[in-house]
Image (tube, rainbow, N blue to C red):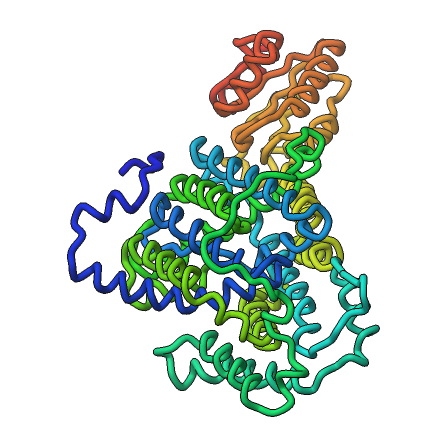
Length: 553
């Protein structure tokens, strides 16, 4: 298959599909569905939407990404990275705003994939992804303290920002419920220690079952612990009711939601492709990034049309799929179909899940996604500029939101990169020595007395263009040679600086000669007219040719 192809993996692997592999995919799909069920509900609640919306997302996005995606084992659905973003959009712009933002994000992803731009994701620095991932983990953790402690906010208090949530938690600390804390701690201990003892059943499922049984059968718990049914008494069962009434499709509203759409698309692309890379190493395969972006776009569009929220590749669920024998997209489709059966027949049981159990699950999710070891390693070993980018991205994610964090982080990273590159660019004049008294004279070039030679190294762009203007000539200089063998590229600002140097030479009657100009700089010089202005005869392939020509002049 061509690297530029967007052919889904499903159609490639089905050519040699067998009954034995179907059994493995079936088992893996069921196991992943069991893991995804409590996670999807928890992430929907963390996102400020109905619990059923998480299931809708896993069904619609999960099925479409498996069908059209570029990975053999990718599992898509709601993820923790989107929780705070979705919660902010829902709180400020309602479900209608979320619908439009997700729809636009899906379209953006499809366009990126069709335009074969899957590889562009590598240009987002690792420090930025580490910074905002850790920031999202912190905001997710803080957002669950309320339910873990059983706090009740005063009427009308609906905090959105992280510091607003901290303030609301402090102000409502008198509503603390020790019963909620007990259930939360028990569920948290199960999530931490159960996987070390037994791995056949998912710890997430064990935790919510134990929590629900504690609320039901321990005296005093039911009256003092909130469950999903208490907060969502009309939890939806069966297929969603799709309605587009009340959604504002005006141009001004769409324009105001564009930053949110870009953020959702960017985050979906980053997470899904990172998940694909992890999956590749587990199943010894190679994903198709362009097909994956198209699938993520279609998956997000399908999710929102089915009543869901933004989705992307879920690394933990994808890894679980691979570990349990899933090797084709069929496993992901089975996972979605199992969740569809749960939605149709078992959703009323979700009302029994206690909110502290949901909070405990999200605490563990936040811990796992924080990747604090990588964060610490960067702080200890990375260059200062990278550390600054990571810390600023982290801080802005916590204090403001991901939109601001990514925008500022990318601009800052680009500026620091350009500064670093400009420091690598140098314009240095040759040192002139007396060949008769220098022990290394055999290695030196013979330069006529009225000739000056400058060697330029590194990319010539706007960050380093001023160095070109530092070139100086003597009153008796009749020829200036610029040696450019180490210049890979020039931009318009650097060309302007070169033109100014040439103009200064013309005024002083100095001939400008350029030696060993590489392909891109030469093309830029020809296109700008600089090549003709200097004269083709003054472009030499080698420094020896340039010195010989200068000697004749």
